[in-house]
Image 1 (cartoon, rainbow, N blue to C red):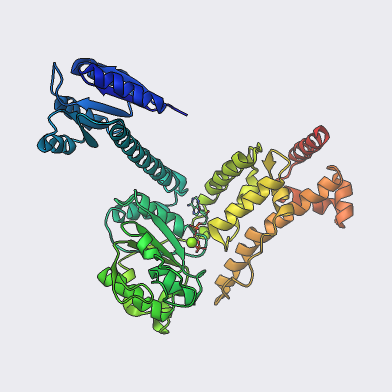
Image 2: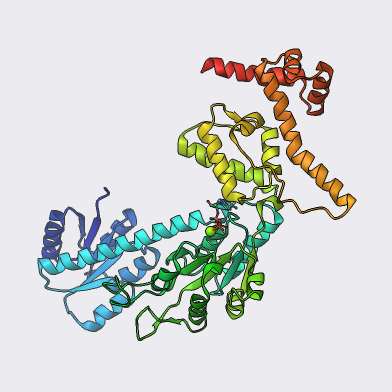
Length: 480
Ligand SMILES: Nc1ncnc2c1ncn2[C@@H]1O[C@H](COP(=O)(O)OP(=O)(O)OP(=O)(O)O)[C@@H](O)[C@H]1O
Ligand SMILES: [Mg+2]
């Protein structure tokens, strides 16, 4: 572990010598300087964690050092030492950024106490900063894949709304990235250094939900043996993401509305109100307007939440992003598993792009993870995809056509999306089973050779292409 570096700037040898001795014993690295000038030079050369600074130096005022160094070096903590223990002196130093002060003469314990306090604070601040950086990275736009104009527009909306404290309502099917976007709003907001708490309202049981959200006092119900803070308290001055908000029952909806309107809530069993300043982001994958019409969701709450609606389109409506997402997850899972996979074959990528993805990005992510785990080759091709994926074929989800034109369109759509890849995979499999012998393959599947060849042509599978493909496969199999 890196040693803590402490600098003592003082013209009194006894302070320098004594300080060095006491602090070195605690395993700190200590340097001493008898003048302001040598102190400044030392700081310029080396990054100190802590500076013990005498206010009255022979060549300059300690205050000047503090004022010149502190603004550009927030990582250096200053403790000023003053012989004239006048309060105004210390107060001025603290106003200029000193962390604490020591009145001379001080004891060993007093010295160690302020030094420990300063270093603890410094560690805490730095940990917070690094957590914040990690959060910012995870929710940064570079980690949210999407170049489709619809997604780019959401990025724009998020950048605009993030720094305000407005409530945001995210709409989108399951797995479209609602939580990811909620996190991005938080990370781009002024609250980024505070907590981001995501609550899935559908996973909490109705009986416990109220106390989970608002906390409870001791004895509020059987089992409430002590007071417990709720999610609203934890999210105070941070962001609270309420996923699946339509799952809240009407009673809790009323309580939520009250928090949104007044910033106040009552812990279960309490006779008083508590205040919260949490910023709310809500989300749902259900048709909330119908729920409002049916009286299942409070209309007033809906309008209160719907200040800034953001609609995330399903993956099938932004097909161009599918290859990018697939590669993004491929890279991630290769890193995780240590596998080396170069990519997807064109036909595999085409099939992925044309699939309807009812589970949206989450489903694609899971599929790629599974493919990577099972992969033995360096390329993931269509055959492999169809061998390892039970992608549910679209069928019952398709709306019933209402005109001949619509029927024809639907038929073409099904043929190109579902049947074509299947047909191609069928040919490849047949050929793989006969090591590329077309006559045998045709015979085995019960087709005329000429018809089999016609199909190969339809799918642009020339014999060169095939030999190459199957040759590679055989070669790789032999090598392993
Ligand atoms: N555009 C994207 N880029 C990268 N990863 C994404 C993207 N969209 C979603 N994901 C990933 O997909 C998974 C599902 O996203 P998320 O949990 O945000 O969806 P959701 O809309 O909240 O789903 P649910 O409605 O089921 O709660 C997460 O692992 C998320 O990181
Ligand atoms: Mg979610």
